[in-house]
Length: 114
Image 1 (cartoon, rainbow, N blue to C red):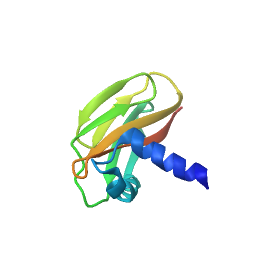
Image 2 (image 1 turned 45 degrees about the vertical axis):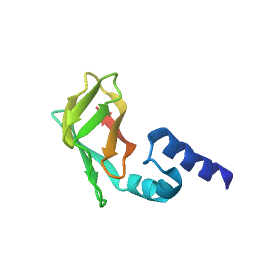
Image 3 (image 1 turned 90 degrees about the horizontal axis):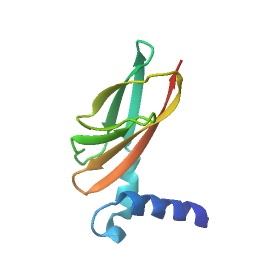
């Protein structure tokens, strides 16, 4: 039972969750479950990504993307497109933040390019 609790604390310390961790820990973890990333492939190697958040707070407009192929960029808005140069399996990561409470989460999406 100690491992899941350690993992939860590691997640929160790594990504931050407001100024008073003792008050926000449950809310922070719960909000992270409401952030998702989805993708669709078009034209073989171009992938459209979309971040969604179904919580009660406000998602910051700026999202940091790591497409898993060595390319990283900051995008304003919840959608972006990326063209992969070769067929492979990639793990794309989006670092998204809420404005209040101040918290940042990393969401992942596995992308398969044939």
